[in-house]
Amino acid sequence: MKRIVVKFGGSSLADVDRIRGCAEMVRGASAECRVVTVVSAMGGVTDTLLELADAAAAGNRSVSYKLLGELRSRHEEAAAALGASEAVALLLDQLDTLVAGVSAVGELTPRSRDAVVSFGERLSSRLMAAALDGRAIEGLEAGIVTDDNHGEAEPLMALSLHQVRENLGDPLERGESLVVTGFVAGTQHGVISTIGRGGSDYTATILGAGLGADEIWICSDVDGLMSADPRIVPEAKLLDAISFAESIEMGQFGAKSMHPRALEPAAEHKIPVRIRHSFNVDCAGTLITEDVSRGHAIRSVLLLKKCALLNIAGAAMVGRPGTAARIFQALADAGVNVQMISQTVSEAGISIVVAGAQLERARAALERKLLRTKAARHVNVEEGVSVVAVVGSAMRGSPGVAGRVFSAAAERGVNIEAIAQGSSELSICFVVQGDAGPDAVRALHEAFDLRV
Ligand code: ASP
Ligand code: MG
Image 1: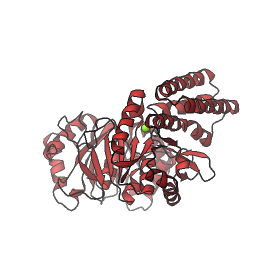
Image 2: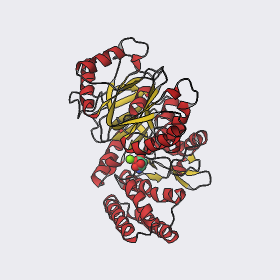
Image 3: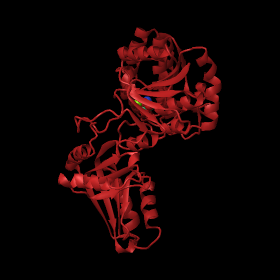
Image 4: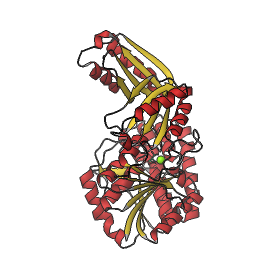
């Protein structure tokens, strides 16, 4: 029998009806496959738990009470309907105790924050296990071991894959219905850790790789990946297949915000990943595979909004090794994530795109490090810009794609402020004024005829 790993996102688990709907899908798939289910926390619960942890550490009792109460009633209600009351009550009591401990100490370490936030998936796994008459398994029990970088712990991959096979292989073959907590794992010392926001996707691909699954399904409230955001381009179409490289490129643009490393284990072990809707089961979704036959030069046009463009300029930068290093080091030290980079061959200017929310931090860091040492002359900033990207691996080595991109933008009167293309030739990105973004996307979607 085929083996599949099916992961459900938080919005698909937001209430009893949806949990039942997900269980329905798993049962359907179980008729033909061995299925391991991976769950996120119920929608919104991870954020609530993080807020709860902070409130407890700050000694804010009224807020912690309120949040604990909300979490309790939501999970108790679902548990009562699904027959998981006992298991859920046990966990909720543990959470109470932990939160009381955090507030008594008045301090929150990354490790204790992980302990608090782990309850989201631990609770939802009990609910799903009850809905499926299955067994809830926590990440560490499944075999996923991480380093101790709490909050963003990195799975020790070889060990984890081996242990997953050892721990879950036989029960799966016996036809047991296994429900694994996404996002939550443990260190080598058995301490609970979490693998980064959105980490349930990563859990699913690690399990898939460990078990040698035939497919990994990432189920949420979208039908799959699209040729463009349908709110911008109503005639955008669902992509039935794309490559891992393309989907990683698209992921940067929040096409479906996945954990950044989630696709790695699947890509490495050549296990196809299917992005699909949890309830619209007739729609096969988007299959991400290693190789996809070449069709269109580009597959998708994406828009990243609310960005800021920083232009760093000055003759002192020309021919001076280390300027770029200094710029990026300054940004890295300030915790700024760089979204796009471009530099002209004259070397007199470097343009950088960051999220709008990080602009002030980026500007301050650059001014402090560069202007004072005269490594650059000025840092100009422009807020409210957007990045448009066209993504498609078939553009590689096919001349004329950039020409078509820029003529299409020009015909719409869209002004282009900076351009970047990596040598992988998987995408071309450019910066436009924020209000020109949607128009540029429509123009490109049309120019490349992505409807069909
Ligand atoms: N519940 C975690 C989060 O919200 C993990 C996940 O949903 O994948 O980030
Ligand atoms: Mg989530």
